[in-house]
Image (cartoon, rainbow, N blue to C red; front, side, top):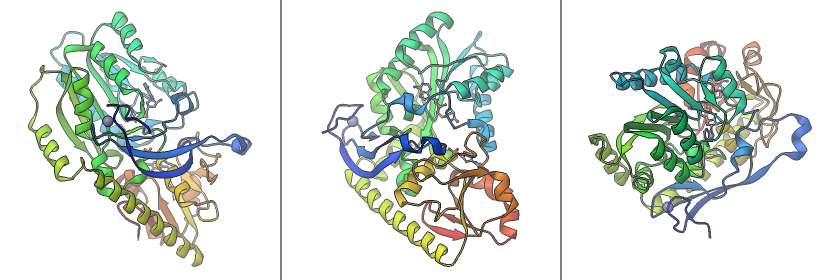
Length: 406
Ligand code: SAH
Ligand code: TMP
Ligand code: ZN
């Protein structure tokens, strides 16, 4: 019996995807024999309502000097974080020499705006390669994992933080109690802790099961974040639904009772009850929809291959690792995956070992069908791939359901 890492209650496992490789573990042929696999299984906690991985992978295996995800590869995300930086900066105006801390600052996609504006800032980024890119862009960066101990050290060196920011990283950290203790220690009395992550409500709504992979140790709901916050003397004072990453939620927290709570929090509480997010049955029914989606995708790909169509993947996303391996696809079905990230090119996809080729290759000779693994960047991609459509190319997606379109 595995216990909830947030509240200690007995967990309710609802799906296992079987043995999975590291989602961002793009590899060379020489490493095929030592590839690491683990059981990707998810459980729901009926007490605190935190959905979580049953067997999280140790963080050093995921985040290191060869981390393959560079935040700034997406133009749309760069714009998203620029807007966020402006809003936070505006909120801090009037404070004397404010200090902004970011957990999981990656290549500096968000903090570079504070750096340019001359605001005191610090990024915490354990993956040394992406941290180096941030430093080169003028972003002060410490290459370590955020912990309560580190928070104590930062407090001593830099003083309290007026804003602690985090995007797509809180859900990566299995030891969340330690992180929340660190935030409690470091946050100024009138400071804000603002973080965003893929939202469980969106996964339930879109059956976006490809959000489930090793890095995502948790799938947050407002309820689960409120439970966790209360344990640490923090309070959720605002929430904002975001369209990025296929449906995220931004949570704003303050010290308990320091900031008035917005109506958006009450509205989301009600919406979660309406969506039945507290009920175990909702997760059972998600499992059924996931299995149905897999069967449809396998069938559609097989029909296209029978018609002699060439299928290639578009975007070697971490999310695609779950889909490819869960559906059992190999390079027989998906000839290669096109990706714009240099560090992924020339390598092979985790588990299935499908070649990752440059975006230039896709442009050079369009395939018949492009399997849209980067579906969360769909707007950006559709806008730039008119040529593919004009050449008769068709898209295959599986979110929210399996569908071919031109
Ligand atoms: N904030 C960026 C990056 C998200 S990827 C964005 O939204 O695009 C998650 C990042 O968090 C990775 O760069 C990873 O190295 C970092 N990370 C993972 N665990 C961490 C931890 N415990 N403390 C700080 N950063 C962490
Ligand atoms: P993400 O879904 O985790 O943000 O990863 C997106 C991946 O897709 C990343 O490896 C870059 C790649 N990509 C492309 O190849 N072309 C594109 O147009 C976009 C937006 C992303
Ligand atoms: Zn729990």
